[in-house]
Image (tube, rainbow, N blue to C red; front, top):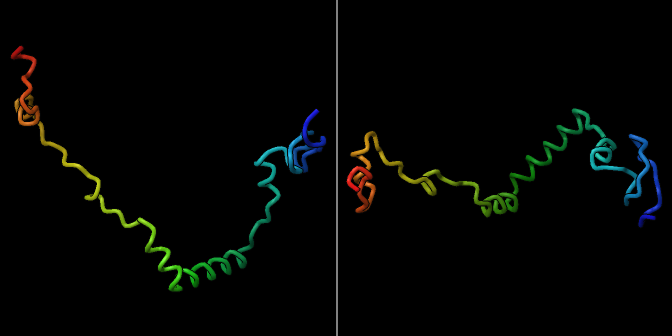
Length: 98
């Protein structure tokens, strides 16, 4: 006997004992409304207007999104032959000299 009463999923008709009316997240996602083009454009317009306000600009400046590749990139050595590798071994000998 489970914690919740037995129910039938609204979409796939599977009986389950979970908290909500759906058996899984995928069935719950199916119950969301589809936005029309007019609603999507209205939401986009509101978001653009908000992003131009001083509080949104201040919040965006707090986010570390302006990362330059030079901040974390390392130099790649130019090694074409085994003899060029000697400059990077820091005192270690090559296997041929053992």
